Image 1 (cartoon, one colour):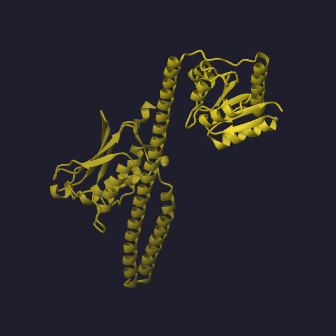
Image 2 (image 1 turned 90 degrees about the horizontal axis):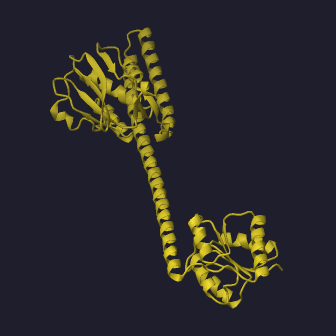
Image 3 (image 1 turned 180 degrees about the vertical axis):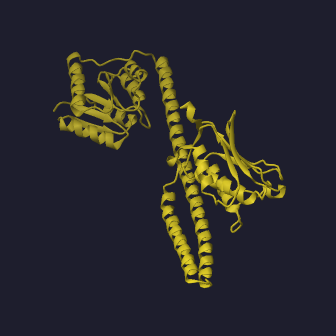
Length: 391
């Protein structure tokens, strides 16, 4: 038998592990779960050594050490701290000033820990004396309160960080779900439009005047069916859509591509003065620009001849402007311009634009003057945009 060791820790797993290590080295072990229980056990049957955790309920390790060293029956028994929570130099200094013989930080390899324990027991057996406190009661209480306050402050900051992390995770999930819902609606709307066109060509094929004309209508129906199949497949991509897909998007090229995808039955020109502007966002931002351009061409009236994209910086970020020289938006329609109206011509596009930008951290408003053209202003926060020449 190598000696009787009293161990105290409120964590059952830590207690079991330490007990197993010590019994494996042929020590007799008495296990307790808090300082008060350990003190009571020691007074009934004094050990050769106590190994104590610090952060415990009822009575923590510091208070246990203080009372241990104040008791005539126990003060000569070596006291060893074994902690994973109080690891600062100030914590160790305070522990040693309380009279602790050793201060060991968890975890330690079994062979290292048992070597330390053997050294403490050997020194105690040789000198027949344990370390003594170097602080009076008032100074001990002052330092004890200071350490507890510092530890509490650190714990509060840690909890605040965890809460912030959980909140951000929840917000990311909410945003991803809202984006998924929005994209599902987009897909549904697109499919509905394609089905309307499919129905129209089916009727036309029935009344075709020639076989060639009928085959032409059937070919168009096949094309639409292929498009619907592709749209259904894309819903899988929408499930992966979220903040983590964001990347730097060059707006000049993006906007020119979206202009080229419009119907060519118009004489509207594009002016894109964005000086290498890039924004950090989901690639589906392309649909925003497609809808803005489409809206200008479709609703700008016969007078619309030009769509202009420009930008300017301000104290809060960047203002991205899309404007045309068409008829503009009537005053009585501005209030519901971005509202969703199922089946309303042109309404879904602007609803999508606002929703997508809002979910991406941007805002949009229409500031044009009726009769002088529409003007959409997109506010991009600082940090979400850059100019290629600045990289």
